[in-house]
Length: 116
Length: 107
Image (cartoon, rainbow over the protein chains, first blue to last red):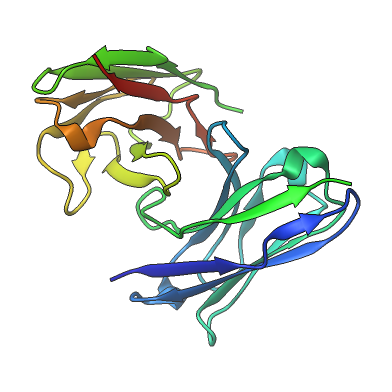
């Protein structure tokens, strides 16, 4: 069974940084594209970033380019999202996801709140 | 960016009803379309990928069709567990984009 467990969310001030982690199990992590998807409170889904299996390709939504960095450690079956220069509009539940067939498996999400 | 538009935004239906949700893309996405549903406080769940392929474990009452810019999700006989918000998503090109959602409510 695929399991994705996010951690690292919390309250951060505008301009601050946060690093999200995702522990993956139940599938061959090193063979899977991985994604981060977010959902602002009470709103719809927003794709944030994708990363290819070995890390040679990374893609980001425009509003986070230059501020967020997706990375992975295949030896640790882990996915990361480094978020810098955080803004109020980055407040959301952040989901770690496996993306071999669209977004086929999702974690339970971790809440990031950007507020002073 | 490719804009995805779902209709209707809200749908009221009864158990046993046949339900159809439409998703339109602002440009051709071939068949690179997925459907998800989400219940309050839970993560989304993949139902359909590549426009019409049923994800493993998803009941056969769910079906998807379409290609290019027009797509539909059909639930042949609505069950109590199906009351949720449904999203379409294109993964033809980056940035991946989602529709705004369709909330299926109890009539």
